[in-house]
Length: 534
Image (cartoon, rainbow, N blue to C red; front, side):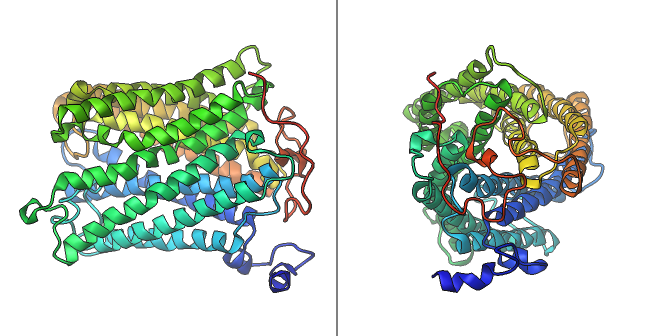
């Protein structure tokens, strides 16, 4: 096997190939991690432009900029691109970069499959975005693509959308298999499972979630395909099917998917807070068990998205209580982060600011989630802007802020240069203000009864919508600072030391900045367990 692999790595003393071939054929975990992160950043901006189109239309009542059909295509594509194109690939990019360095492995376990799982994505998303240019337009049925809107009443381009979803799913499953194989087989001698950094633990659990639920998504889009082209009626009541069946199958995938997007964020924050509090993470073991508990419970709460479909009372009670139960391990995590900071010697560099904002704002999103879990109250909140406010508080200051925190935290290690700290802080404060000005007023809009996914609205909702639009443009344009900071950090900047933040303890900080092309040519000595005695 070694002789077969030799030509790939023969260029320049086991360094990367040169030019475009380096990126096309690379099997190196750092290169593939970089590709994922750059792809995610590009999708973040495409999805962001769609969000700004939505908010610009909602700046005042009446139809201003776009037609209602195009507005629906924007809401659908924005959701799909942010979930599958921005957040998930960003976390996979972080996993590729960090997991081998954190566990003392030379690379990911399955490097060729790693390359393949990335290169599927640009084709999948090119196909999905191309539907916007097709006759009848792109997907216009909401990111949850409920039948029969996505079957009987869908534009012809829905078939391309289904194929794109299959390709994304294949990519995710291959990435997850790679993560599991790497973590279980390639840890440095002496590192037990309960010695691993929490980021590695959260990704191990996330990878099992991905393998469990991605086939469910593939199943539901295949059933859609059959209903559209092959005369079946899975979701058509006239043929003996049931549209509510679609919701059950979709949310059985969709709710664990929410945790796929937040568990790695918990891992990132659990790395950053101890570093800048200069303390070991409080309650390491309970954090691992809490993460596993959240993952297991995520499989039994799916129908809390469906309280309004008319399910039996026993079903409503079961899903109400199980949803409230999931708040317990999440609360454990929040208390452990706070306990880690308690009496710590804290400093507030950019990664720490994003991590702190994550803890505070994600908790707000969690509390509004508890409100939505109350079945009788959910009848008022359902399909209003309150729901939009809730999941954006979970996903933007949750997933997106944690990705930004990770970028600032590990960027000096990746590039060998320090980023501009003042610009990082400016980016943080503009983002923090922008997110809250955008999404907090939506709680009030929802409680007042404004439905989601509409291009026009009643006059009484005008003021809060105007405020939300200002916030959205502030948040959107402040991300240009982020990009500028990353580019200037890659190209120049103060030389970074090996242990960039002094207080950090993982194996990745024992490598040079930037790390060598092959991280650990021989397994590093694993000295200190990661656990504390909390």
